[in-house]
Length: 115
Image (cartoon, rainbow, N blue to C red; front, side, top):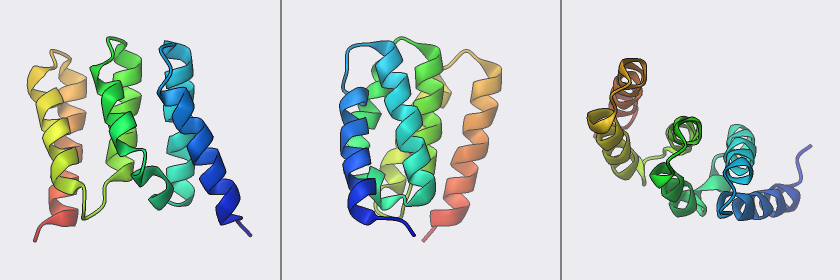
């Protein structure tokens, strides 16, 4: 049985890692939040803007991990914002593999959340 208050406390503490100036702590935070999202996506919703800020980081590995987390966090309320972020990174990336992956994710979200 999962303790909701414990999950909320974990998500709150992990969000502090994401806000750190240290790349390793940011990566750890994004990875931890991705694990919590697998258990219950609602715990990540309040940390969405902190996660989006990680996309501005120069570290490509962190950007990829953050894009993956945003994809996992997507719900009917934030689908448009997430698709806009994924589309922006698809257009600006020179990495063909990442672009292909982003197209697949954007298509998947469009199918899941189309009106």
